[in-house]
Amino acid sequence: METPSSSLRNAHRLAVAGVIILVLFEFLPSVLEWFATPRWIGAVLYGIPLLLFLPFLAPTRPKRYAWLCFVVLVYFCGGVLTAFTWPAEGSVSGMIVMALTTEIFIASMFATRWSGQFMNSQFLKQEKTDPMQPTQT
View (cartoon, rainbow, N blue to C red):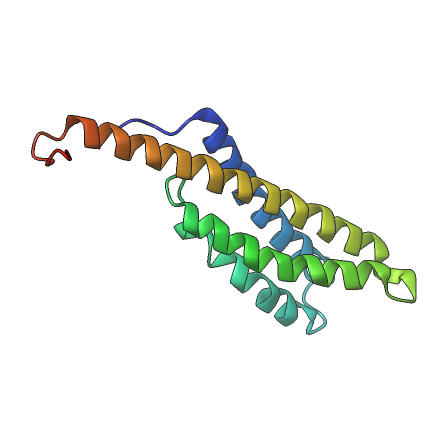
């Protein structure tokens, strides 16, 4: 089997790295407070939906990237609310969340596209080389 293109592998790496950085960004304040407040519980619950995708993201599975895009949109909406609500205490963190979710979304969309193209090319190659395939007249 042929290996995926370098652009697909790079999009996969960007999506996975973005998910990890987003979860760590949310968990970092709890670590700095040494778990003194119950904020870490919220941080763990915040990261669970994103972390569930990590073991299942593969460069040849476009539907998984599409679902990651849907989930990331919820996090983007939360970032917008954090960035633009009054008072502006969390506006910087909201902007960072918006930037990270945008990066994850774009990388996942490109991974979806390139993965679909890769799978289609593999299917066409298999179709051409399969002698048992009936011919259409």
